[in-house]
Amino acid sequence: MTDTDDERNPMILSLFRKKTASDAVYAVYNSIVAQSRQPVLYTQYGVPDTVTGRFDMISLHMALLFRRLRHGPESAKAFSQSVFDLFFKDMDRSLREMGVTDLGVPKKIQKMGNIFFGLLAALNEALDRDDVEALAGVLARNIFEGEDTTRLLALADYVRSRDAELATQSVESITAGQIRFEVAA
Image (cartoon, rainbow, N blue to C red; front, side):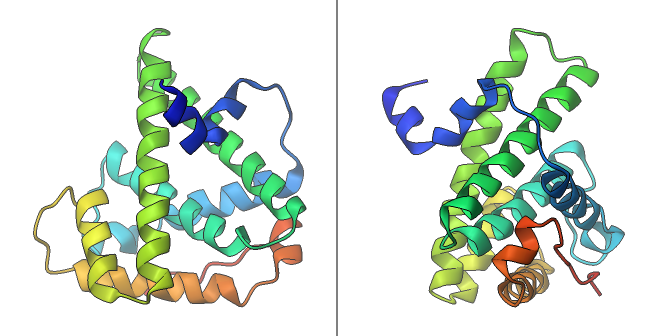
């Protein structure tokens, strides 16, 4: 990892700190995972039902959470950090269960972190501009690996709807562990 990676991805460094996540952090993370496992994402929107596709969906919903909390108070940023830490602790555990070696896990976690932060930055840019075409491009590159898909605009609409839905939820409610995602239709 270079110095610029450390500056760009300060949350990666937190993986090595020892701390326990609160019940609220677990509740929000579990809600994100549950939403990311909605069958409609894989059947109707065409997200690949693979390990990578599931990681992409968790990353997408995590990025939407981070967008919602990014302008909140310091406590919201600390909460985001805790959810991030739990996410990558879970990814570490999953990699080990899949048989990745002790030497391979840190490299894969670093790569996953870079993918997540790239998605977050691109998603923020597209959604901040309310640019549906840019959002579709972000999804094409990050979820579908550049493949052409007829379901891309439907997934972009889903993302915009979830972003708007989260915007209606108070930071205080979310950081108390109460986050809602409408089941995708």
